[in-house]
Image (cartoon, rainbow, N blue to C red):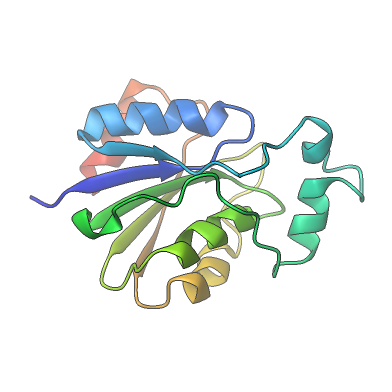
Length: 156
């Protein structure tokens, strides 16, 4: 059995709760993808065209800096990667994370939380950041309960 990692970015805590449940249910290691500069409430105001999140998502080349890049990725064969959906895709900090590590040959299973949209072009936009990894569009796990989590874990 291969070693698995649940890695997640959570701006408001919703994705973090799901990630913790997945790691526990799947007996996986857990890693938070944290920005070097934390997002504030104002940064996350998607209605403000000058907010940090709006600017980052308007320019897909922006790569927010990570707080921690000391993860030993070589010990994992599968990464269960979670994030909130922003503007129909993963936040660009997920690209930063993928670009920091050698993910060649690894399987990356995505999960997300969202206020209303689906995965959109997420896989297409993440693939160039880890071109030699296998991406699997997983599930939206909004308000996930124990059964939802257990069902998703069975798909790995």
